[in-house]
Image 1 (tube, rainbow, N blue to C red):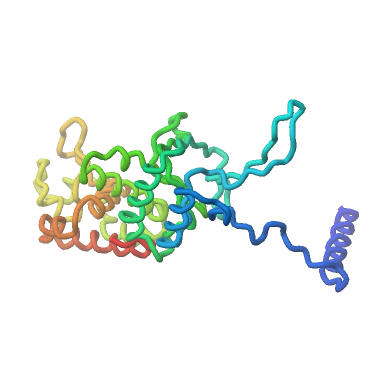
Image 2 (image 1 turned 120 degrees about the horizontal axis):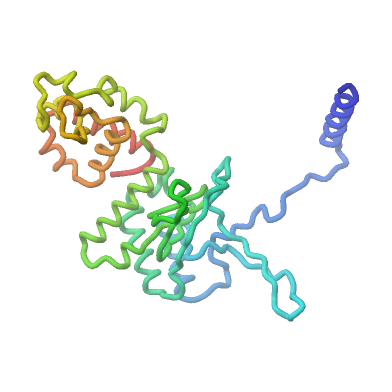
Length: 308
C-alpha cells in the first residue's frame, strides 16, 4: 500500500509538471471544427437543396440517413474498397450510454417527393411548437418507419420518435400514408406527445408539485371519501379533481379506487394534446380542482420549451 501511494503521488506530480511546462504544445482534438450534419459544400441536386432550405427556415439540420460520412480507408484482397462509416448512435445521451438500446430504421431512400412532403409536414406542423426553444433539435432524421427494441417484451415495437443529444429521429409513416386532414393531425399529435414525453413524464421531478394537488386520494378507495358511493357518479369524481377512476374488476363499488399517479397524469396529459382548451373548459369548467390541475400541467409542459 505504501509503494502504491508513493507511485500514485509521483504520477500526479509528473502530470502536474507536464501540464505546467511552457515547452509542451497545446493539444487540440482532431476534427474539432468538423460538422458532418450539414450538407457538403459540393453537394448538388434536389435533396441537397431541400436540406439547405430546411436549415435556413428552421435552424435545424435535415437528415434522411443516420450515416454522417463514409471514408475510404483501404482495399481488401479482392480489390473491393473498404469504408469507415460514422453514424449517429441513439444509445448515447449527454452523460450516459444505454447498453440495451437497439433500433430498426427504414429510410425514405431515393423518393424525393416523400422526402419533400415529410420535411414540409414537420416544418409546418411540428416546428411552430418547438422552434426557438430548448426543444428545437440540432438535427432531424426523417424515417419511413421506425421500431425500437423493448427489453420488457424482448421484441421490437413501433415507435414514433427516438432521440439523442444531437438528433431527433421521427417516423413519418403515418404522415405519408394519411388520407385525410384528420389522419395527418392524429400523427402530428403523436409526434408532439413523444417530444414532450422525452422531457416531462409522471416520474420526473418537475411533476411532483402537480401530484401534490390530489396526493391524499391516490390509490385510495373512493367509498372512503365519497359518501354513499355506489359507483358511476362521475360528478362526485370530477369534484375531487379526477377525470376517471379505477373500477373494481369484479364490479364491487366498495373496492373502486381513485386513479394512481401514472393514470391521473396520463388523463390530463392526453387531454392537453387531444382536445382544445375551449372544448375541455366547456366540459369541466365547473370543477375548480380539475381546471387547476389542467392549467398547472399546461404551465409545466410549456416550461420544457413546448408551445401549445
